[in-house]
Image (tube, rainbow over all chains, first blue to last red; front, side, top):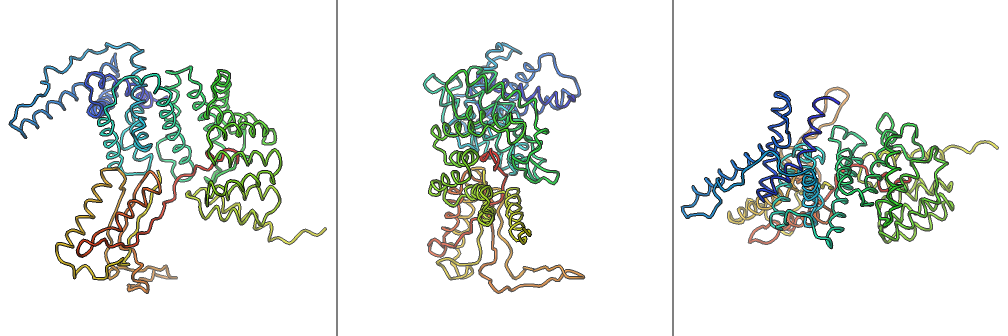
Length: 423
Length: 137
């Protein structure tokens, strides 16, 4: 590990703790968030030159507090200039005095978790929650987040500022949610982390490799949540799902950056260490009971990752798990996956029959065509497969998929055009 | 989040009179409407970029020839379908993109009557989430 990445890791680890401490003391999330960003910038400037201070967290809280107090003072001065009326503002002297470190490690962890609950608040749109989480808890800069989502920094800055206004307006108290709300709020946090992972994993194909590594960031944040809530099996399930999916990343593209389907991947290139960690996590989680959708998805991913060869895949087990997941979520995309598993167990005709029931639930959706193409190919009906691959290619919303689907259609078309071999 | 390109061309909507025949206050109301919409989309963190384009009078068409590229001026056959301006937005859903397009289409013309220009809505190609949603293929 280079000194720079070590410093970055340290700052990202400390960012939510420092923010938590400042929000706890000053109460203003919006202002505290700005102050933390400034403190992080100051650290990134001073520490490489002067060395990391003995109490880095205390240093950051101190620096952030000074920035906040400066901000409050200049805001007060501005208001005094604007109005002659006496304002009931706290004087700088009433601002709480700072000490380097007054809270225990447990409080730090709680602060990070409370921050996550705040940033992933259901009152925010997913896009706002994602941006705010990456900045406030992930410690990424606005420029980095903008880059990750391919929008200008100014657009991302607006989005974050709007999200902070929302939080201020909703007056969410800075404390752990009550028991009745707890499960609901944890679910929001996991959903946001899941979306961050997806964005990163999806964009790591094609020409977007310069983008900041969001799936790694999502794994890091989910690991943090798992450390704080080790008994929550859905948190463990989500972490396992991310690790088991990310493990296949080295094998999912060819040297030209084209998508390689699961069945054709070189499994020796899968990340064995990540698979071992993910499998251990999911095995431990499912024995604790209360199986949720992330655990089911992770269990399915684990079955794929455990198969040394594609023909060793335990499809009956995968089919059973999709059945559970379908009943739990009612999500038509899950039904689509169950149709694939059914085709692998009972043959393509069974899968195609299941797909017929999905036409009205996923109308005109290219994934339905993509799966039909695949199952018709399995069944040996190449002309139908070509037609569906083409239809899917015409409706997909991504360039790598379009290339993949077009290549499938072209490959089968070439086979059907060839004169039959002499008997 | 999906990105959409919202496209305005020269089709006039329900109002045929060209803008140079409008009353000044109608032109102002028209421009103010665009300005307010742009501010709204900027503040919501949805607007990535947006521009009005110069007219077809300044347009060129370039074709790579065997030697030097061939450059021709307009006018073009289908004048009304030439791109007049665009906005690139990054939004939560297609519904939201359509909602914004409808706002653009409602830009007021003479007498404050909504112009109802047709607005093209085109999704920008994005990242591939195929394997994530189809983990078994």
